[in-house]
Image (cartoon, rainbow, N blue to C red):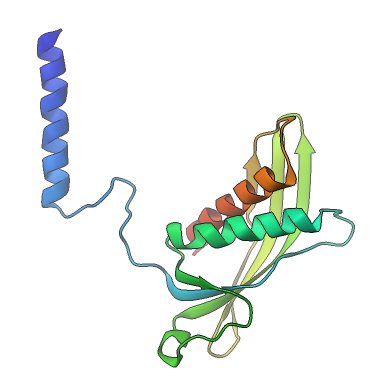
Length: 162
């Protein structure tokens, strides 16, 4: 048993050493530069008849805003209407979105959104994506925890699509 533990420790040490030699900073691929210098994040709207509260939309926005930098989508997130340095405008985007679906069932909650990315310099559409993100269903769910969680998950869905 002691030999097995020693072998596992030795293999782990070798992998860590190899990781340091190759310049990797994390196993998840972190440390790469963000895709865009800045993202101007506009407040999300909702499709007609969806019936989500304004609080839910605000929490979703806050979660998405927090996570865009952590996910590596943007170096910085700026508020609607903020100015960006001329040098940064070429590698900056405007993110505008609408929540188009919200399904709640015993197995979970699914939030579907339509997100449009525009080049900041000339306002041309770069890409439209429609990610669906899920949250666990719970009797303790509130607009706050579901909104923030699905907003954060949406940031990673944007990263995958880009």
